[in-house]
Length: 204
Image 1: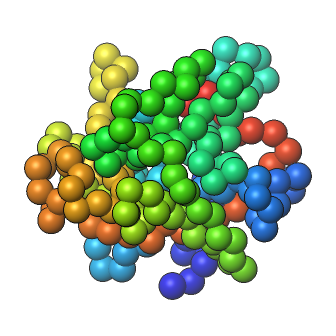
Image 2 (image 1 turned 90 degrees about the vertical axis):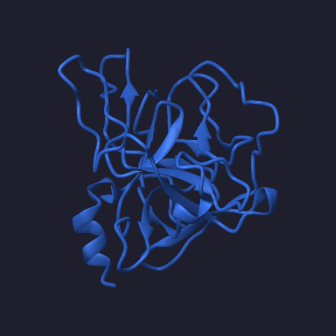
């Protein structure tokens, strides 16, 4: 697989010279799924509605002039979203196995949730991101019951649900279809986004 293909299919990974370097513990990176010959191959990981999806666009909000909204999802320090909002936004796996993030101004996580370990391993062209908590071996994408190929906005402004929701690769996960066998495991390729400041104010 050529790295140029990743860049063409995932514009979120464009590098910007800055202070967060790809081989450091606070590296900022975007994630692209890799599972050859599958419908989820080379889809970007995106945050929206406190959950994570493959495909579509991120949901962000900024009340501050000069901090624009973005459709990119960027992770920093292995298990946080790269945001400006006070208190930050942590990434975790809930008690059903879903990959999620905390709401702005709140550290709440449902009982039974796991904060990791999440691991970022840097590489030459791209690194890898994984979750090894609760006995999981990485991530899987599960089809949603009312999903679309990508995020679209309805006439009322509500975002459509993407087709693939991201879960920890757990045999006992509670997935939308009710069958873990419907899910597809994937490698989470981490592509560095070197930036001097967070890319978003907050994800919603």
